[in-house]
Image (cartoon, rainbow, N blue to C red; front, side, top):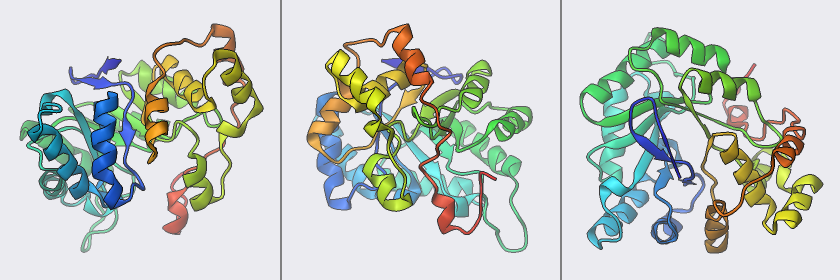
Length: 292
């Protein structure tokens, strides 16, 4: 249930993303998730709920539910903080009430302007590497990087990125990017492993792969849900999956993906579902096409 990163640390292969979790829900959801068995939580400064996550973690530790070393906590550097990485990381640590992060990611390859200079991604990465030597972060990585940006990061880095967190699901499989990362020892985490479902439909007007008849048919065959089939497919292609849910039943359902295995033939059937269909389009609010 865990993969070993190129940093030598292990990361659980399923986690819970906290994007769009309402502040008042966060504490109960995280505590319940820990009771279900989740040990990996994916946060970000941009999600505006690190303080609530921190309160939940504090209660989990103080009550003896889990120890700090039992959990894998990820958070991310926002676009506006590329020029002050150390300060941003320390701010996240303060809000999360942690001494160190298991993983810190560059959220998007989009540094915004600081005073009169534009911060390069290489400059940002140098500061990310400093976090490791300072003991603030165990592993560092990138998010939403395409093949060329991953290649560039591998070329200029002293500490290789441990993870590239990207959107990937049956409708957006990105095989060349996934295989390139894996070939070079960069673990791929799927941040939208269910195709965004209702959240991305609401925000971006997209459709979800979970409504596809093929996934529904496989769900009947394996006596699972379409979401469980999509998550199992992601795990079997050796990606880490971090589905998000605010519902207790879905939290349990998304975690129950270790008691079955998709056949080679069914993996190939899902492999043929690819539509190169991106559902997560935050840059539409920024007025730029970061994927162009």
